[in-house]
View (cartoon, rainbow, N blue to C red):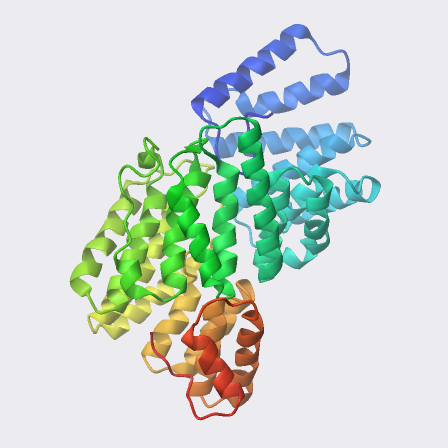
Length: 468
């Protein structure tokens, strides 16, 4: 079972071989009880004929086999927990926004939690069950208790931040990931790892994202600087690839430093022999940032090849049935970048069409657990484009829609405040300015947007119409 990473990614060929071998050994040794035989049979469903059936088909079959085991042994709480985890995986693949599988998993887990409140697996999987904008508030108690259950575990320290991030509780997310990063470093030291552990990088991405939302830009710079000093990371997986490309892209784009974004680089030798060719979707983040940066500064000649590179990466990605759909995520970035390029070229109707298409596609997909959120939310970008097109009423609607799924984002709140002011909606402008100022109580850097919000609240004449 340890070779099947239920909600992360399909097993590698080596992991499939190890899992199948373990099952055969278990069958040779022989199980003494029917319960043990049922466990072996349940996991065998996933590994059996892996060379003929795709990952998604085997995952759904495994979920059904775990359901049978769970119903046959109703007093076995661990069977319930493993069945719940299988349901979460099934729900992620189904992309069903009624969240029927996730809700069923949470119901099972909550029943176990009532009897075993210190069970680390239950709290962990509850967070994954509710890791969606519409459900995140239901996991807040589990998020706030999980870290105390397993204080030495980097992942246990990090997991609560999934919910804190979904709810825009940035200071709690920061504390969670500072603890996770420290625990990951301690683990690497204890085990004499030659490089950074992937859990450290995973925590760093969430940490940088949270710092940037509260304008703690110096702290975010510290994360970025630490990232640039890492020469090796292990295991060489998608968590490493994601963090190494997302952090620099976020750092430039969230601060609206378009020239900085346009010049981002990912050197071929980054992380030594890291297999970047396996993670082209991660490389897309750098091209996305460069495309946005160039387009927002009006450099269409520089933006166009970056947009073309995004299209090429999307075309090159091969869908693995049952794996996360990174192709769609690259397509969303391609549409957002194409929209800003079209706007820079004066093609305003085309830019709006492309950005709406990006927002609709983004709304229809769920994020992967590896990421705290999109590099830039497409619907928030639609709001920004509408402001550029002098449509503040429509822009305000888009910012408010974006804030419902990504609450307390700095640029979402500022965009809503600016749109409300330009639409002569003083009440809502005051509401969003107040939220923005409160959000940035821990700010350690100067952002003009905060000064503008404070000036507006003080009744000064300065307008929330800054364009950066």
